[in-house]
Image (cartoon, rainbow, N blue to C red; front, side, top):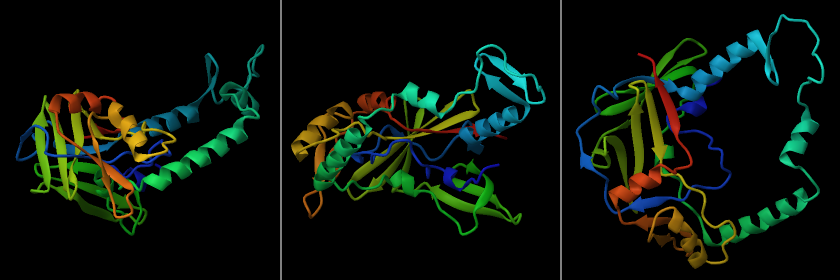
Length: 273
């Protein structure tokens, strides 16, 4: 199985190369609850890891030739116009051309403009992971009533158990519209993470993760105007250098629930017990 370290809870490499916009709400969402119920409690592994294992097992047995499945022990040559897709085919599909250099240049210019007015905080939910000295080769997340653990097994056969977080006045578990939410208190407000269970075996951990703000803003006002599609009426929070480190927002539970549906990233877990 692949190295498991980068799957520890929310410590993942997200697909976007742009920093997510930190949003701090003025209060938690929903009604506070003392702990997770039996629907959530249990042991989980990242669904992506389980799917990778299935894909790996499939690839050992079979190969795909466009609309055909062939066993790997089948030595028959490809028929007709069938062929493997090569690098040049891929380049044609994605449209690699001479404009690539110009795109890279424009991107650097926009990055420079953005860095001149922003210094975004890291999302607190991404700091929950604990990277131990021994890298686990396999691991799982364990939800209990009032805390969440990471349990791993390293290459030497040693099992480890670390607390990712436990509920407290600064880490509230709430419920709204049949969904769980983790509310993390910061000096700027509350970061909110949505937890959702379906079919009794799948769990999603979804941070408020958005990167679709203005790509090339010339001012803080222009950047702020572009955040209205993320959440309405947000106000920039500035550091001593007058750079934007995040945005403050007034909580509207119904609006927030709708916005969470468009969040760009989520970690999916599969219950294994």
